[in-house]
Image (tube, rainbow, N blue to C red; front, side, top):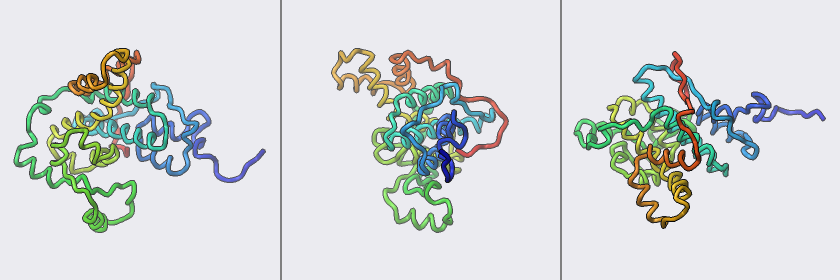
Length: 271
């Protein structure tokens, strides 16, 4: 029977790959959010095969540093969007960990072991970089900078990058969503700050995510033979990379078989 009206948003691309599948696989959080807000159906949504989770990136070292964190925070923002709408995200969580591993998000740095953020020059700049209140482009695309400033002034709570650096991840997640982090990463102000700021965020932002899933898989890995409080204490001593490896070991996943970044000469893309 013929039907009238526009085609379903789920099948504009092809019956085999929906726009939502494409946006998730290419880590396009704003596209995912827009599709979900305009009727994309999650009830029949399935993730594309892992080998379709790829993105092309300029190999310029300065751009790559930003790009890696943009994609990492974007993947977490997508998980937040899917989960708040009731989608079971277990499989996607493992793919996110593989993305982290593939882009070497957790490369060790001595900066993480020092109190570099106590430097007076950095402190002065970081206090001026306002994270909250922040007007997201998702909600205020068409208003002027003056209007944005007025709205932000009336909003609470107030949080600067300097404040964020001193918060424990479990405290920060109570204030900031993964979308807040992704908006921060996209800000021009952040890219003007020292590299160690990004390295610090590499470890802080995914912490609650990694801890959440590692705890679940660690409990399974040890066959539930330790009290949950002991598991918490063990997990809290580990770095994010170790937490991801627990998840890979429990599920038999091989993170090294996954290649997310593909080299390409390109301009900065919208994510």
